[in-house]
Length: 321
Ligand code: KPL
Image (cartoon, rainbow, N blue to C red):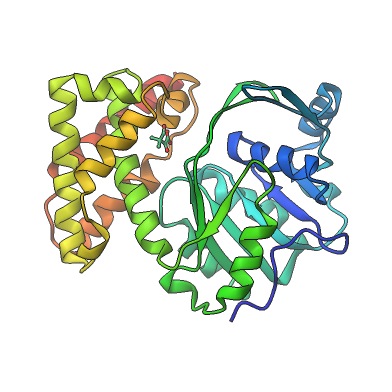
């Protein structure tokens, strides 16, 4: 049962772990809406740099918002963390959480908003008394530099309780969605968040690594015959895994869905392409790696996804040198 409310109040602020594009988007609009928000940055030096910069600068079509959202680093947190929005990249999540572990309230509520799957289960194992909710967003936002972000396109955000969370209290979820809908952001609840997350996984498996391999923007994948054929094979392999998992009702028109995301985000450089170009670790393990692991457990062949997993790991090692 969901007992706590992930609602920013003066007694329990909304902490945001991971001040990348999505965390900063919620931080900036939440601050503008008057919510009590605190960013958790990596260390004291990052907080100093952030304060010198004057906060988050969020550029959109109409304006540049400057939001001096209060920021902490793990050792400076002074109130127990009851409400936590986690927007770190998947591979950094467990380390970031372990740095703030002493401050996490026993009955805290976490909302995980990131690409990839598999992290929620790791969090539940490490923090068994915490309620872990999950979400998926198609808000388009990217980092221009340091603490400057561009809100490039409006999208949809769904949150919900996954099958594994055991939560049934949809009223509390509704309130939570409303309390995170800082204008112009719009958060809705999904009664089938597992399906939303699985479809997003398919999008990320079929688009992100291929933009790295073909070194192109999302939309260009549709105009390169080899890339388009690979996209379709990746989705076919996901369909085979879904059938083995009995998740066929999640998959209506999956090919069209994935291709449509490539079309509507045509000018985007995928997050994985940006990670590789910046020499950062990618989310491949939580995306294609997660799929390959499930496939192995169910004896399903996913040769192209396996090949792509190995290739991205190789390119990622190369990019770091
Ligand atoms: O989620 C994305 C990402 O880049 O991580 C997509 C939907 C592919 C948009 O670029």
